Image (cartoon, rainbow, N blue to C red; front, top):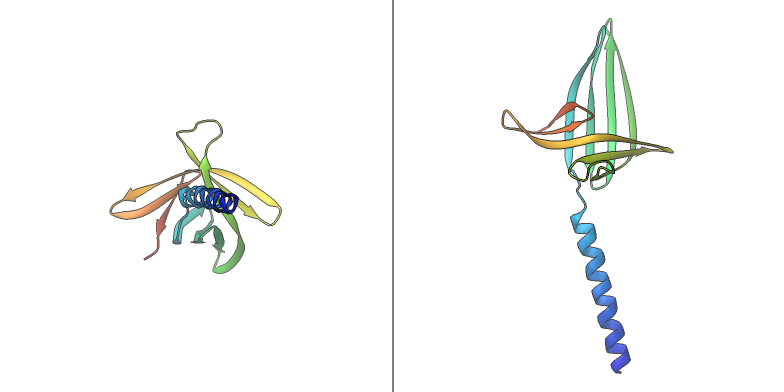
Length: 124
């Protein structure tokens, strides 16, 4: 009986530690968008975050023609390997994983995230 109680206690401690690690993971929720200007090509990029899932929609236009491209995948916000004081965001779309610099804050009273130097404003 004592062994069973000890085993249950150890399992509970391990479960609590696992939950605390998951609770510390940085996640985003909602849509963030940014207009882009690549010379004659203009458009916008929108990220929609739900838990650890992300949908990236790129809309580009040239001379009245518009093209939409949508990718779904996952993301993770972690400390930079080079500098523990900085965060990075890792996107995985299919077999392709890409890491970008990441920060967040407010700009003109709007919630923003900054990915690889591009500011994305939260869509209300």
